[in-house]
Length: 293
DNA sequence: ACATGCACCTGGGAGC
DNA sequence: TGCTCCCAGGTGCATG
Image (cartoon, rainbow, N blue to C red):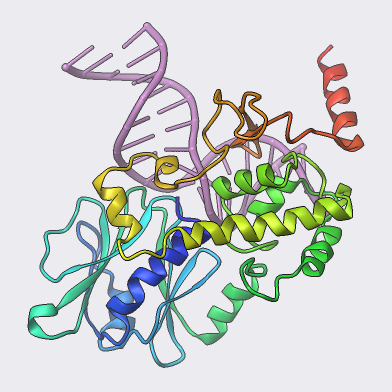
């Protein structure tokens, strides 16, 4: 599941491989001919590869940009031109190059939830404006986070972290990892954090994501390592502390990590390290217990 | 303003 | 073995 660090890694993998290449053809193996995309892309040059939140941005030199969202199972590869299409290849962009080095940018997406489209500058601005601050930007300081927490004080921490309008790029895995590192229960209300807790959340948010990005800057693309041996989202990511570790001892206190469901999503936490303090939560739980009785 | 629940889609695992 | 059921997770939308 690509979250900010994985998307960043894909961007770094793609940039030297597609920058400066012209799109020579567009096809969709096993699908409808992508006529609109083809019309918008053929003949244009990919001038760079960038990221905004979980979006991959491929600017085309004029005011247009190819935007890709990988959702749950999307991957972007550069393959040799003419390589046999994989069973889940959804979109193939033939790229220019010396005859022997011609290549293709391939969107592979098992579950077909991802998308790719070409937008103009105003549309790109609208997409970007709907996404919150980049947590790894130097401008994302503690004051910024505290102001945003205060503005959404009645929301619970985990749904808030998953909300791309609150902060860019956090998904289910890193939301749990950040909350564990910050010793905060996922159901705590944003407005209930002490100044020290807010500072801890800021520090861990930056640290956990930065470490995950840094762990992937080596030459071997993560995607290729996954293809060689990994299976299951958690296995792709080294160094996870709690995500999908239910039943295992907490790496900090040895209590058993548990799995719950928050906002319909699997949520992993150490109840000893991340106590569910906060009066509103308890009141709500008691009301629920009374309603059941 | 916030939460909930479903829809989208498919493969993989559990259970029978 | 082979069937059904359920689940995963990002996001958008309808509903409470």
